[in-house]
Amino acid sequence: MTLDVLYFAWLRERIGQPRERVETAATTVRDLIADLAARDDWHAAAFADLAAVRCAVDQQLADLDSPIADAREVAFFPPMTGG
Image (cartoon, rainbow, N blue to C red):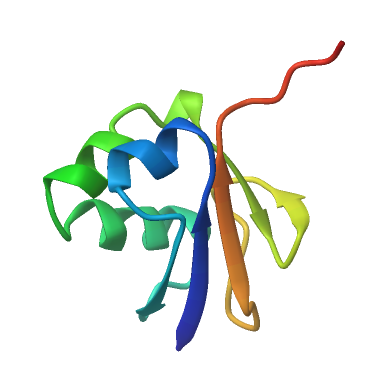
């Protein structure tokens, strides 16, 4: 499947781009992260601490075990704070 993957804040800085289109066989967000982290050192650094990463699947907050089978977009960002 082909997905648009978006990166925000320090994830974007570590990876060096705000978005990319990826071809993956991943079935969950966690699987997708493993695929991305295996690409290069920049992706590996961005996903080194999964406790510091949040995600959304098709603009809905999701957890790492959420399915992505019918998704078009997955976004990664740091935890949000209120204020």
